[in-house]
Amino acid sequence: MKTNSVLEKVFASGAFAVTSECGPPRGAMPEIVREKAEHLRGYVDAVNVTDNQTAMVRMSSFAASVILKQIGLNPVLQMVTRDRNRIAMQSDLIGAYSHDINTVLCLSGDHPFFGDHAMAANVYDLDSVQLIQTVKEMRDNGSLQGGAKVDNLPRMFIGAAANPFADPFELRVARLAKKINAGVDFIQTQCIYNLDKFEKWMEGIRERGLHKKVSIMAGVTPMKSEGMAKYMKNKVPGMDVPDEIIKRMGGVPKDKQAQEGIDISIESIQRLKAIEGVSGIHLMAIEWEQKVPEIIERAGLYPRPDVA
Image 1: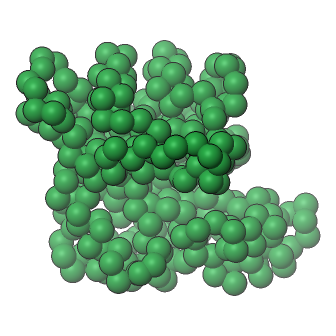
Image 2 (image 1 turned 90 degrees about the vertical axis):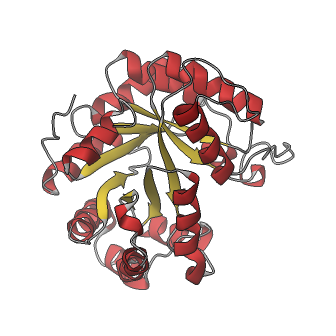
């Protein structure tokens, strides 16, 4: 084992891993973090804590991760390179590890244009691949990015994101290979609605044997309404929502669309579980954490393995 991460232990056991997400609040409201987390307790192996998602100012991912750790959950610290230089990122990683936070997801982050501070400066001192390399050097060689040897640097289980649907599609597998070469241990994908295209991406993964080098978690987000489906299709970059999903959501009364979205997500999970090379799911129930237990139970992923 490279780390003491519960998520790493789940992958090592051969069990199908499950993670979910906890978006920190827009204010100093730790009770909201705890409330969201309680919906997830016992149903997921680890909880991603987003880092100022959509470039909106929120409680820091570091602080929210500490809150989750204090109440006995396993946080995945998300870290975007948009807002910090390499000094600050390494400092935050050391700080997080001092609180026994041992799993990190390395991301670039949404452009500030999409958030509430459109004129904010992008930092991007490192990109996401360089951040992966930095965390790996800290863990495996006890070295900071600048080369200095330091005692007890973070031993992090290293994650990254992948979007199987971004253009050009032909380069998506090569992009993943680059992150694997940098030292990533697990991957969480963008929300998957076009399962045929995802299966084609996985074929490319298997052809290069990449599924044997990294644990791949397929992203799933339940739709709440036909309007949400249309928004995801037309307004969210890199999202691929087939017309048949929108038609299916619109084919039921409005008061039943949320349940239809949950049903679709469970059907998707069943199909994803059967794909060779998929090691788990990342369930992103955005501000809908209370539905996670139903989805996990109906998908046959409960109870979770005890690997502690």
